[in-house]
Image (cartoon, rainbow, N blue to C red):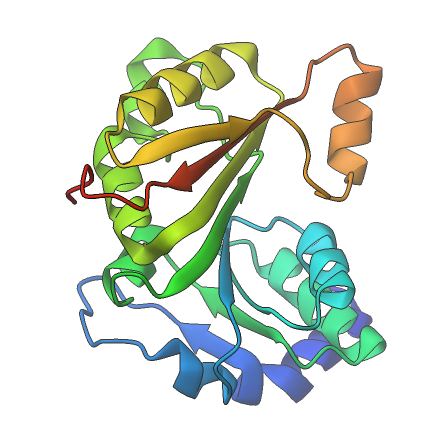
Length: 212
């Protein structure tokens, strides 16, 4: 990490950081974590954290929990939190689905999965995050009407994501628009290289058709 990132990590991790341990199923109370009862958004794999910080700054009425394993990205997000004086961000390190298991059903207002690893080789597709079992668990953690927003610049993964999300009985398609998602440097590079950007937004149904 750069000195800026290291300084921010040292200053903020003790109060804003959460280490997720494999196999830990201790319930995590998000209202207690943030100290308020605002709607909660989970961003999985936030990269360098630019999108999460920008969204949190634009939406002070919602709380944002980001999880990542990339240490420089964690440092950069904490530096942005420090620079922008964001009070509605918490940062977790570890496996995202381990974290999701600790959350209460219906506790999330939204889940963001922006540009996850596409695992392009066919033999690695089973490692992709957007799989039926993971989607079912994420949907269960959404409140009725809560939104699961995915984005990718890998066409094959976009097709697989859409097929998986369409097949979940508890989700319904909202649209393929960005819905205010900030554009990232990574995304601009991808678009410049001719890679199409796909946004997939789904909502948890409010009826009784879902089951985790």
